[in-house]
Image 1 (tube, rainbow, N blue to C red):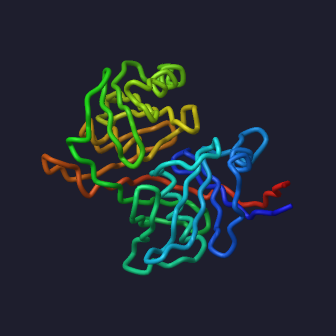
Image 2 (image 1 turned 135 degrees about the horizontal axis):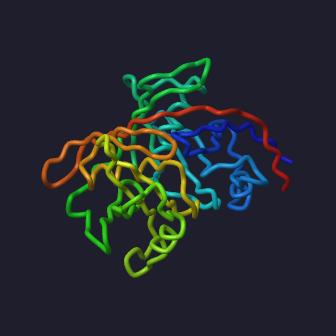
Length: 265
């Protein structure tokens, strides 16, 4: 038997199990990760992340979906692992922002606010640039990659929309999305914010927030103030006419609890 010390974080309700593997890598199997993430038989999470060593960076982030498979970039995961690094006592090697490497390359994450007692804060994450030529109209919306593939579609009465049924249908349209996609439904709110609800591949369900998803929604809508079921986000960027640069995702994070998990081999 192997015992893991884990931490449970959430970024606006998008929740993760985090492991520090800098000195010991347990080499978890797909089935073991899925078991840990299971909401009835495990800890329960939308995904699992490991924080490891990486030459030239403060750390490496590896993200696994709740089905146990290695996933692409996770925006809220990147924000949570930034706070996790601070909690572990890791200091940024350069400046105030952590430099780490993820699935889609280098990222920078910075704690804008952190309460050591409550273990809650606000984290800003630098996202990848997006070329205008890589954004395509399809079906009734837009498709783009913000570190993970996303389809964005406007709907009416989003609060009561069947996100799971319609999201699952669109996610598996292999003619449009050969590798599958995350699906986002959006609606303008009276106060000027954009409401976003997301069906995530790998989780195969609606999540309370999706960082790469709200980033994709902000880019195609031009609205930088977004609200999800789990909390509010701000997405800033510079549009040059040919691409979107200096994309920054800002929102809440929290460390919910930590504990021990025994893996039976």
